[in-house]
Image 1 (cartoon, rainbow, N blue to C red):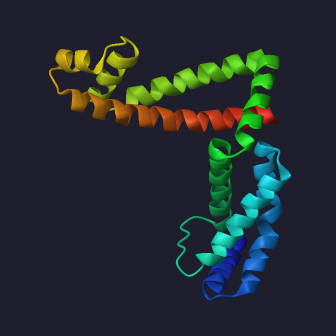
Image 2 (tube, rainbow, N blue to C red):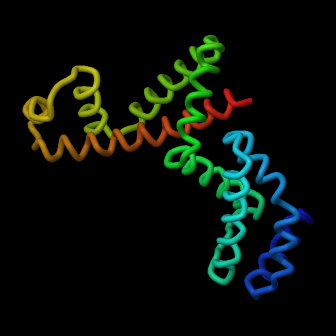
Length: 189
């Protein structure tokens, strides 16, 4: 609780342009944030860049930033997001996934468990879809029907099929991206 008050005071000072507040926040959190990123990426330079960019953005947005959670949670979420973005788009991606593939081959039990968890997650996401969206997804993925065949069977337009399938696939992909990041993180340790 005291730390939260200190964070709020630091954020107020930061919003007023106090560079010392940024320095205090940096000293409080940089090492843990770096380790959070490094545990996944295993790339010192990339992790240093991620943390440095985070503090630069914090300074640049100091007067407009609204943090509705704890400062710590906000910073960790930002680092995790940037690590994920680095994996998805950065040069680290191929190396990280090659190492993960090697670990999966060596740890088949963990891989099988991860695969089962991913299947369960897809099933949970599909089950939570709206009825029509779920029905379109299942016809497309499980019965391998074309958009035109689905439209004909459900008496809807092919555009509606496309829209419903796009919604379903976005939700499934988002869920799987989260699970994949967790699996890669676990395998990296």
